[in-house]
Image 1 (cartoon, rainbow, N blue to C red):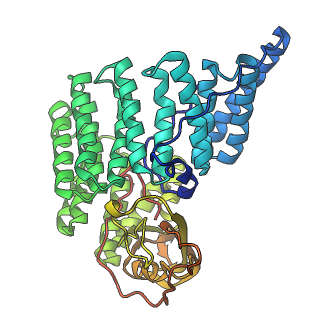
Image 2: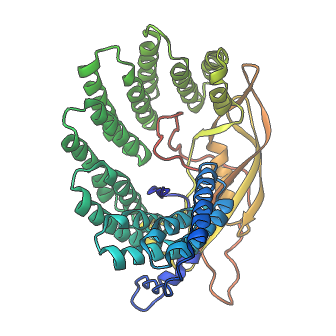
Length: 488
């Protein structure tokens, strides 16, 4: 079984380790060298033992990946590669899945250069053994593209996703659903390049694919519209998000009637779009319609009811109405406390404070700590920085006593972090059904910045001071933007 690599964009953790692939004179990634000659086939008894060991190791690998224990998964995946090499030889098609799985574990762990090498070995084998448009190319190409995106190499990522899409279309046609993850990866790559129109196109075309793939499946089309709405919310296109969620609800209502509970998620998404525009009353009204729908069901879904109540509480926190927020949070707590199966949801919402609104810190900055626009970023000569703050999150959902406890490079993002915290809104932690102050909360932000030239000092220091407020940023209602979660 191949563990399919995620096509989504992830925060870059080791962009500089991919510099080797962009510093050649041609600017292209060099082709992987052909592997050594195939190993001698093992004796029959040894082959049986190796196969059993490999199968057991593969199951262990899948478990470790599911548990996100990526460093351990790398070691097990390497064992699978070694065993498969002994059984079939280094240039066999049987090597493709183990190498792809090894690349996935390496990418998830942040070993980007190693992941690139593993994926490229798999790709080279398929091209030699099965042709340039083999369907076996799709998984390693998607993994390689995701690796480039994770390292901030969005142009290379887009080109590689296009190769994967071509291989997919050749084998499965133009309207297969397997291509959706590839188009999601293309969207993230274009977003990284600052080409929003192209990113939007890759999302909108998925509606056409759903319509052509299963014209009568209204539920799938409604879900595709809600996915599009979540994309628009995440990228700040709020009127478009509202339209997408309203159209999804129209389709659901046409097939399931006015009381169809499938409409609840569309209310959540539409409310988020209004809230991010600053239309607090409109957002609250939409959430209350969703709450009325849940309450009208013969059997109330307490998990969904709590989700709506938490979203209302978050909205009131952002609007600086802590008393109203407290009432909604307390009601959600009660909904989630009556069933042991819902206690994990209660902990997810309330065990620790969660940042739900306020300004966003940039992912890529210049030497002064200012956001570097996508068109001016490039990738060569960038290092990864980090800034960590410690603070108390009050019962009213605000930061108090924030201070910087880690900053690399020193001082570059300290002031921005403190200003962000001054304007941020938090869902407070709760204990025994009541919001409480929570001290010693740590908030971490990773970013990329230009590497100082040899012989030059590091970037200028800034004197961190108290924040002075900043424009509001996107809200993050629970479950309303599930296609991607920002780690800021």
